[in-house]
Image (cartoon, rainbow, N blue to C red; front, side, top):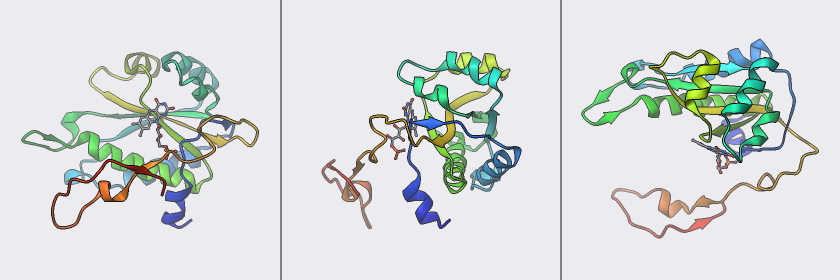
Length: 186
Ligand SMILES: Cc1cc2nc3c(=O)[nH]c(=O)nc-3n(C[C@H](O)[C@H](O)[C@H](O)COP(=O)(O)O)c2cc1C
């Protein structure tokens, strides 16, 4: 799949149906993330792929209200890092940025594999750590629900891509430009 197509196809769907998450898929997703650039090649990311029925059941307890749709995910990926694992240049801490770069690649690879990914911030990091046996010093930055797009479930929001900021607000050329914050579909 061309990168452009994966970028276009990736959507944070909520209507999921079960799919077997094979060892090989996990390896491909982790490889895609690990090939991302990072400051000094520090590779500050770590991922836990939760796919057993028992652990997925426990993970239901970590989700915030409104994120119950994650209960039909076939895998939940815990994304972790630590500040000490990456560059800190004056007040610039790169571990979140670099881990995000890794996640971006993982999301596109998942799209190529025909999987749906949906990043979530609405969860309890403390409960997640407890269930997954994560040592205290790790920062659980995000969870990613992984599954297959359901053909049957109709969930509000899934039918069209949420609007994006107008490109004239997103970038400028040669110097900073203060443009209107106007959302348009593109
Ligand atoms: C860091 C992060 C946190 C998010 N948290 C949630 C969440 O808790 N619940 C949810 O339903 N969607 C969550 N989302 C999904 C966004 O709402 C979604 O990516 C955005 O609306 C754009 O839609 P798209 O990914 O389909 O293009 C999150 C996305 C990111 C990147």
